[in-house]
Length: 63
Length: 464
Image 1 (cartoon, one colour):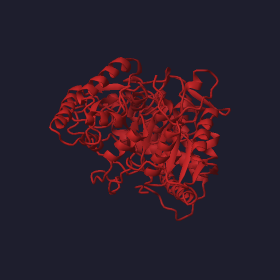
Image 2: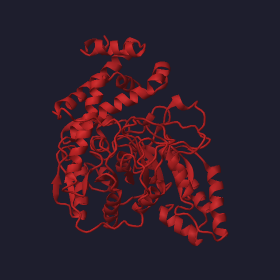
Image 3: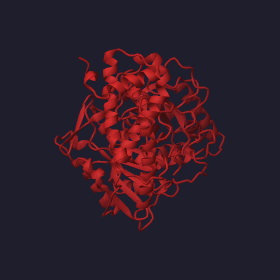
Image 4: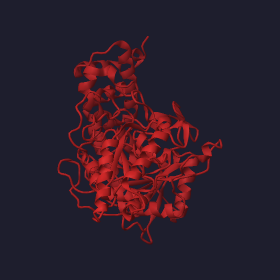
């Protein structure tokens, strides 16, 4: 059974792949879902830092 | 050894060597050492011969020579080189048209008299800290052939570390100059974000992409950096700042306050990496600890932005040519292209806040130091690193100490330090680099501190 079927993020990954126009087989989807899970685990910490409400993004960064 | 950049330029200027003979030496070294290391993916010897002859003609006419006259250099193969296909380590680029002109900083080095001898191997599309390229092979470490050179600018670091050329160019999105410099034992400079032009450079993550030099000594690094500085309206991220030369002022000012980064940077440094920092700190008189409190979050932000921008950049080709991407990058790139916008916006807010924190730290310190890699070079194919009892994937873990810094664009000079620590005699012969981190635009202080460590024989290249 592909690992992706056990991944709670798999429905999001499938939907986002479809939205972006990708077509992959089950093994490829499993691999992508595994990579997305790693990104999601890392992403959690950027929401753990309570930033000031008005803090701005740095889309074009000029130190 | 071919000599340092300054030695070569002086010898040619004084007539002790000709540019043609230096080029012949470089070609012989490349022929002897490259087959085992796999640094070069292409050579430009015909062009180099023309440029060397032009330098020798200038001297014969009694005219003044430019500062890097006759110094051989090579570039990571993501820099445009006229009449050559820009590979960026990727098969998907192999069929592209050849570049019409050199990248801006390549042409600036050429104008300074340096002679381009070739293009260098890298991690595919600059996505990773190894140079174990699925299409173009592994670049091996000049100190130990069973180990990797690091990446993504692995060919650039290894070519200098093996003594083939005294200067190379690389790029650093998350650590791709600093990590391979650390693993190969060479000097590397990641300038402030926006300092050097990226025009004619294959992009990866616009928010983080930096370019910079590697060299066999600090003066070579500074000479190359000076030659490449200057505004470039064609690169929207390039700061429109005048040239601020550093190579004539490499003395460290008295009374500088140098902090040792603790917290995240100490926790993720193994005993060898900690020893490197300790040696550098002692030589620089640094005794105070400093902390970037949100380094871990800055690293996470870098991950998210890298995934999103890299994935979006390559999406059109991933849709059409997925199988032509290497297995180590294609699923990661697609996953990155699925990242929701709210994560990216939050990551960019984190980035701004982390930058403000770092700038505040520079009220108390002029420079900060930290290890450039968590450990010595891993073996080729090694999947995990064990750092102070914690296991981390090699591919991601090698950048754990560099990502928080490039995320906020600070200038860093990485110097090769030899800690003499390790479980085996072989490991005790390997370097771990030290990052000398400055406030924005203070490359001068980073390089001056590097020069101090070089003069104290704490930081040096060791050829094999």
